[in-house]
Image (cartoon, rainbow, N blue to C red; front, side, top):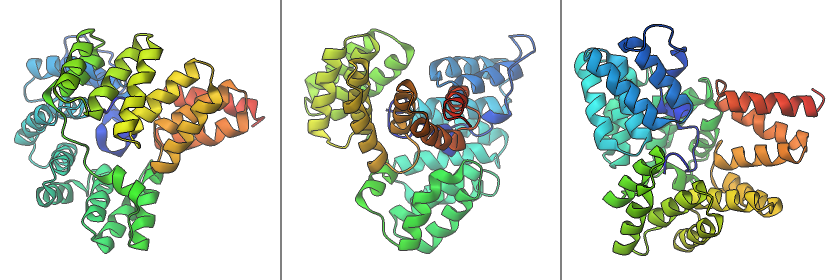
Length: 342
C-alpha cells in the first residue's frame, strides 16, 4: 500500500515532480493555478484524497492546465490506481508532449505492469529533465540485468538532490549483482484485487467502508496478504490494536517480509509501550529494505521519544537528506540536534 508501505518517500523518487515548486496558494480559491498549488501541498502532506479533489477542480476550471493533469496523475498513482493515473498523464502529454514529469509517470506505470520495453522508452525521454526518471531507469536495468546501463543511471540519480536513496542501486550495479532484499524492493508491486484496491482508496479517505472491502477480499481469498494488511491498518487507525495485531501477524505468515505489516505491527507494539520489540521490527525493515523507508521514520521517532538523541539524529539526518521539505522531518531533526547538543 502506498500510504503505509516501505518507501514512504515516493514523492522524492518520482511521486510528485514539481511539488517543491508549489508554494501555498494566495489567490482566489476558485483559481485553477491556486487549486493546483494546493493539490501539490496536499501530496506533500500525504493527503492524497484531498490532492485528487484539488487537481480535479483545477482541470475542470482550466482543462489546458498541464501541471494540474500531471498532479492528478501522481495523486492517483500514489493512491494505488495506475489506470486513472495513466489517463491523467496522457491528458498532460496531449497538451505538452515533452512534459517530463508525465512521461516519468507513464514510465513508472509501465514498470508496474512489467512492460519494461515501453517503460524504457518513456523514461529515456523523461530523464534529461526529470531526475526521478534516472532512478527508475537504474531500477529497470537492474531488474533486466543490464548492469553498465544501470550504473550510468544510478550514478545520475545519486548525483541528484535526495539521491542518497539510489546508493544501493549504484552499489548493486557496480557489483553486477542484485541481492534478494534489493530485488524485492525493485520488483513491481503485486497486482491488487478490485476489493483490496477499493479498500485502500476508502482507507485513504478515512471511510468505515474500507473494512467491508478488505473483508470481502479476504472472504474471496483468505490467503491474500494485501487484504489482511489493509484490514490491519484499518483496525490500527480506528484504535483496535488487538485486532490490528492479529491481521498484521496473519499477513506476515503469508508474506514474512511484508514491509507494510512489519511497520504496522511495530506501530501496534509501540502504542502498547513495547518499544524494544517495535524497534527490532523497524530495524528489520531498515536492514531488508534499502534506502529511507517507514522503518527509518519509526526508529527516528522511537529514539527521539526515548531522548536517545544521538541515535534519533542519525535517522533524522537520513530522512532530511531524502525529504528536505518535509516539515515533520525538519521539526524532528531540530529537536534531535538540540538534544544532542549540536
